Amino acid sequence: MIRAIAFDAYGTLFDVYSVGALAEQRFPGKGAELAALWRDVQVGYTRLRTLSNRHADFWQVTEDALVFSARKLGLDLTDDDRRRLMSQYACLSAFPENLGALKELKKLGLPLAILSNGTPDMLDIAVKSAGMTGLFDYILSVEAVKKYKTAPEAYQLGPDAFKLPTREILFVSSNCWDAIGAAWFGYTTFWINRSGQPLEELGAQPAARGRLLTDVVAYVKNSIKEPS
Image (cartoon, rainbow, N blue to C red; front, side):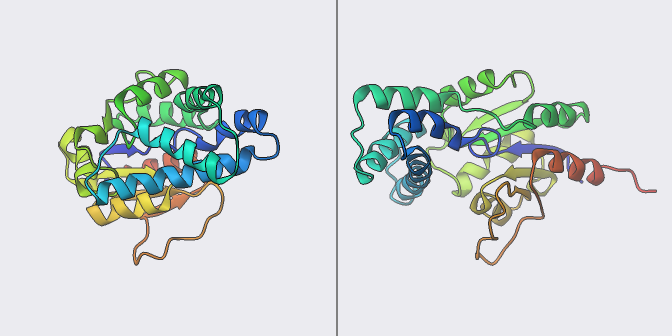
């Protein structure tokens, strides 16, 4: 039975590619490419820093990834460009169905959390910008342990906060690698596969999957039904 839910933030609740519109304004014809590379480099830097015990917070990692990505694409990233794109990243757009789905989950009486690589300040701004204030019982940042997902220390933040066995917590992510990492740790996991990506070849898979956060609502409702 699911007794609590933890959500990844970036890519799951907040659209990391929504910066592409501003990037396109600054670099016509290159906005989508910059947004995609920026995200890939950002995630790669979190893994490298955790593996090497060289932690920098997610804001710094994100900015470093932006600077490198622009350089790799041969773009002239001015200080103004950098500031504007980073400011946009701080208040990413939420996916359109998310607010309603979160409110519906909240009505079910389950405690909700965000468990994210983001810094506390980044997550606070993102939640407020998306109108999600008051929906989460916990906002958990890996800054508490200085290790990024998929490190076990990062995933341990969930059961520590909820005071529940890990298997009774549903971990929701749009990143397949994250959903599988959480499954390895012991969570029940749900992969939101918005763009129809193939399953990662990691010898494991999420407990459930769907295309939207509303699919998570249906899954949770089914899991908490009383036996007939």
